[in-house]
Image 1: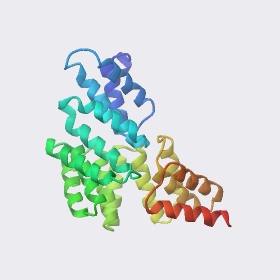
Image 2: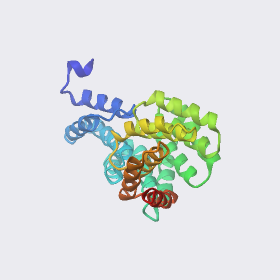
Image 3: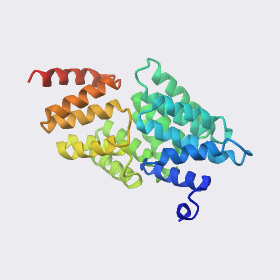
Image 4: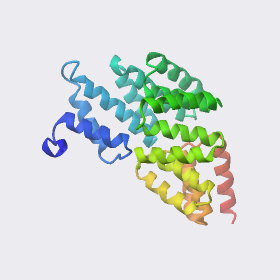
Amino acid sequence: RALATEPSSNLVMLADGLAKIYRGDFENAGDQLQVASDAGSKGTALDKIPQSMAHLALSHLYRKQGLLAESIQEAHAAAADKRFESEAIAYEARAVLEDNARPDYLAKANSLAVKAVSADSSNANSLISQAMCELKNGNADAARKLALKATELAPFNADSHLTLARISNAQGDAPETEKRIARAMECAPKDPEVLAEKARSLLKQNKSSEAADLLKQAFDHVVRKPEMSYLLAEACEKNGDKTESLKYYKLSLNQGLSGDSLAQAKAAISRLETK
């Protein structure tokens, strides 16, 4: 209603942009937040609160889209406001954790996540960042404790449920994984990471066609997500679509795929090209 009444209000655009991003609806949200951020660059400290919130939301949006450098830049801008420093550091940690092409990414992400939680242990996003680092370090039990606390603090935060789904998946708990994915989808039904996690689950159930459909929906909202490209290639291959599978395997390599998936993608390309 506010958007219909005052469509040019910076605060209204900020609120609408925030609501869209945190439920995974990215269309036009970035533009709205950028306007709110630019408008907040002038004025009093109170005026700058919307600007800092816009920087945080843009950091969240850019990471979800795979724009890690841009996400980190926005997190740095938000951290300049001490009132949002903890959450901004947490967002930087999440972006760094995904930049696994750099050799020191895990140590850097760990350091940032610990700093974020130390600054504010009651911030759900700070706890999520540390939970993701613990999971990456192989400490699933510690990760679960942090993610459960984050869920208690922010029950409608899709990322807290998504983190619990990933932890449950790593521990081989299929029913809990499905439960958490379903809850994340209730919170943010268009979030590309949530859609990708659901697709991963469907692939394990040999539902490759449904998985591919979800991943293609997710692709509408991302710019550079090599693991998502790899997952879509896998779904297409299981569907028997050689052309699409090769396309997405090669795209995942061009986007900087790393780790075990890199060798698997190269092997898949070789296998498909010799058929």
